[in-house]
Length: 249
Image 1 (tube, helix red, strand yellow):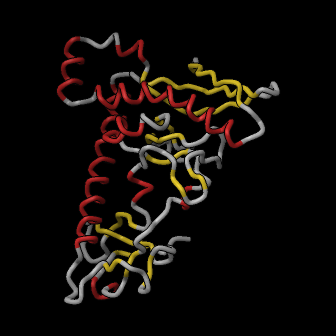
Image 2: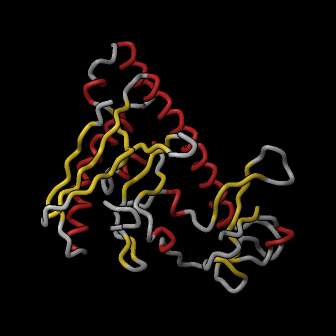
């Protein structure tokens, strides 16, 4: 269980962070959050989809790291083998949280129970005068940009829904032994619907920069072949292929 606390000089002046951090914390995760501004980079490594939280109904965008729950094909021990690491996972042990001293204000937080945090580590968050180090300043700036990217992503999903551009898919994974498994509950942009946009909509999408994440998301589906390749390198249960099927409601 994480012990997340707002970073405060009074409590954390002697706190330090490990110089070397790994992505071991996502070892058992087959999907991780990714934001719309990251789609272009992420699409070179992973399939990018929109998924729906079964409890809240809220949609979010994710990078797919494996073909089954609990399978991360981009971690080899402590080594990350992807060309790109989504910002959301690279910020650990830091995150944004509410500042208890300022109403409705977000502030930088740290997981005090993280193995990368302690007074015996190498990189201080505050200098001897109690002022934030460049490290802490960079962390705060990066967290701020990540929050802005998350807001942009929520807007992007809303735009896709309002333009009726989303379609639900299921992935049918076929194994060489004849077994089949399905991945359900994922969404992407429907190409056929894109072609039906009015000239006014196309111009508006272009001016708002929406076509970059749209086409990056569509192109990223080709990375399913990469997941198959990585899976077959690791497992005796070989994947023969993956079918991408629309869910007709």
